[in-house]
Image 1 (tube, rainbow, N blue to C red):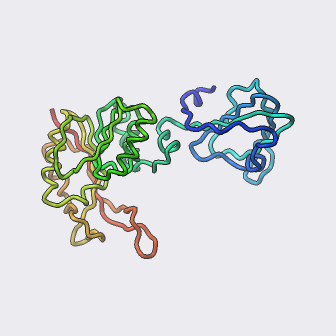
Image 2: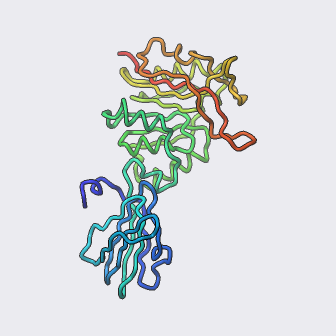
Image 3: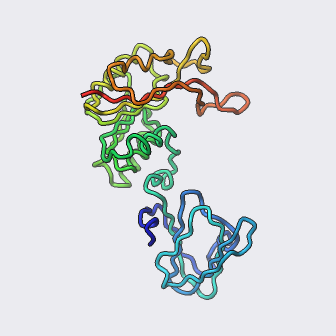
Length: 295
C-alpha cells in the first residue's frame, strides 16, 4: 500500500464474483464515489482494468492478477473492468478514518463548523473527553469519535439514541463512545468534559431553561476546556422566521460567556434544514461561539 492508502480504513466488502456474475455496471463506464477508494482483489484468473476519462476514452490499461495485493481505484476515477478468463474477484471499499461512520452507516456529514473546529483550533488536541449535547442522529458525535476523541452523545429522541447505541455496539467501541437519552432542560450533567458542543439545539428549549442549561454546561467543563455553540438569533431587524420556543437576542449568547476567554464569536446569516413553501432552505441569523474556560 502507498503512504496514503496506509491511512485508510475499510468500511465495506462486496461478495465475490466470477466471470459470469460480475455485474454489468462494473463492466461499463462508472466511477467511485467522492471519498471512497475501491480495492480490487483477483483471487484467480485475470481482470482487465481500463482507466477512462469523462468521455469514456481509455487512458491506460492494467491487467490485475492474484499477484496484485494493493490495486486501489481513487475517488471519482472513471473506469471499467473486463474478465479475460475464468475469474474469482472481489471489491472492498475504503475511506479516510474521519468519514468511516458516514460511509458505513450513512450518517449525514458533520456540521461544517464542527469540521472546521477539529481541523483548525483543536486539530492538535487528541483524545479529548467530548460531549455532544443534543446530538440528534449522531452526525457530529460519530465524526468526533472517528477523530479519536472519547464521546458522550445525549439527546431526548429515544429512537436516534437507540440507533446510535446499536452502531456503538456493532463497532465494539462502548469504552470510548456512549449514547444516552437525556432531557437537556434538566441541566443535570454529571461528568466533566474538555469540550461540549451543542449545534442548533437551544431554540427547542424553553426560554426559562436556557440560563440553567448554560450554567450547567459551564460548570461541567474542565479548566481550559471549551464550549462550542451554534444557535439562531432573532432581532427586530432580522427576526427568526420560525416560531421556536426560544432564540437568542443579538450578543446574548456572548454575554453568558463574559467571564470566559472568547476564541470565536460571530453572528451571520445561515440556513436551517427546514425549507420554505418554494423548497428553499429557510434563512436566519445564527450565533457561533467558541469559548475557553479560564483556569
